Amino acid sequence: MMRIFLLAAVVSGIAVAVPKVVDGQLGYTTEETAKPIRQTTEQAPVAAYAGGRDVVIAADARGHYLSNFRINGKQIAGLIDTGATAVAINRSTARQIGVYLTPSMFTYRINTANGTTRAARVMLQSVELKSIRVRNVEAYVLDDNSLGATLIGMSFLNRLTSFQARDGKLILKL
Image 1 (cartoon, rainbow, N blue to C red):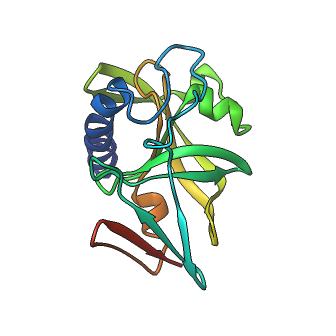
Image 2: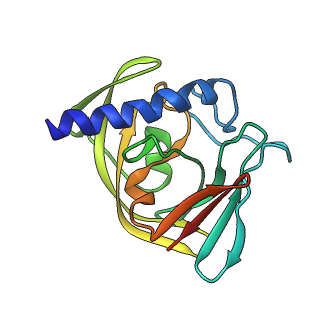
Image 3: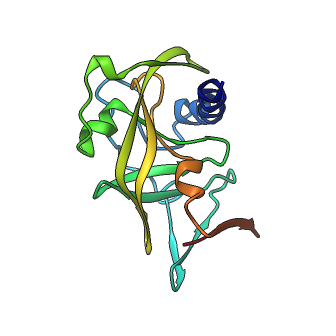
């Protein structure tokens, strides 16, 4: 039962983000060989250091919180998604950050806005955002055609002391 609930929560986060990805908001293609593309200044993820171990992210024009994260030591653009139970990445991103998968690892079936896809559960060594670093973060890897960008979900956010959206900014505290 818990597995079904977890998958439903991951799917809800993906369902929210996939239309944004297709719309090109996150700066990634959705092809099998998805690679980061150059973003304009208006769309570039921004994270501003707020002092101490706090990080402030300004919302973009659409109210989304985008930033550059370091996942397993590699810089990855991501969308913070409080509706996603876990971090969600695609296969291309997994390869980029050194997560290698076998077909037998894709044991989860997930329904997304693009249809049903397979997913593999993995543990990320670290997810960093400026002065915040969280180790051993649960994540799900989906096919590239099902997820064109990285979603930073609650498996990261729940490890923080707090996070709060206020005045067009997301404040994260470790």
